[in-house]
Length: 329
Image (cartoon, rainbow, N blue to C red; front, side, top):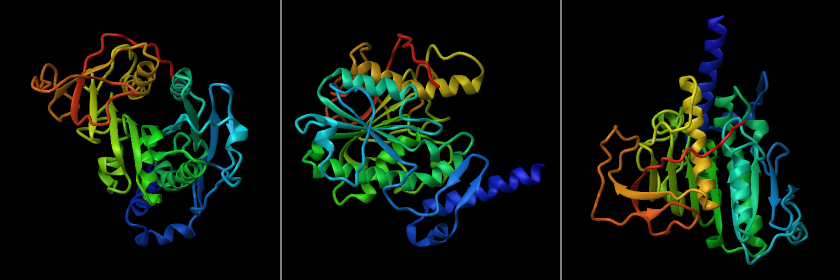
């Protein structure tokens, strides 16, 4: 039995390694259409793709509307307003566009009344337990999300008014979108960017970094386990030491998973102004050792929210006593 399982795992790792090296070295991937159990590894990278969908929500129409990027002049019909800001929200592994906490993020942005909210759903390509194939499918997901981004700008949206917000693997997809654009994005918010295998195998083009947008801000809540460590963006926020969050109970894996999702919950709560998150400048490590945050008293603290200054730089430590209620599916 181990031989079968180990063979599948090894084959998956080899495929992931192939997927994240330069494209010229991954041509063999186009010959494969690998499906096992409920897992899908895409053979072709062509957009639009039936397993990657986009949904628009607006303050006047807070219900999902499927967006067909093949029709260039339909955004107004969906209720999209050019004067508003735009957010693209991308879920992570084993998520969907309407599961919590992605729905919390959606509703938080809608509550502001000044956003068109686009949800990127690639759930058929990232089902549990298909983590390895999910890594492989990120390339297609980012390529198609870039098509959505271009669709919005062609309708008249300014790049400066578009933010990509991604949780876990979704954070890396936000970063990879810029690989498919002639001009990199203006702003990305990464919510506990995924660490497993990404940190070991991910090239610069495969993982979120500060070169992916003019402004990259990152919130860490499970750094060193399910989430990336250290300074990832221009401004990073290490919450409650960065590793485990208050209110997360149960066995170790559940606590880790809960802490991983809390990045989205905290950010959603800060957008709705339900929680006041203040970051104090500190050294660039995250997670932090207990009591050793390395606070820099010569720099200003700032509030963590959608309105965090684009000029913010470095690592900020955030202490939250509030146990924000955040169920997750």
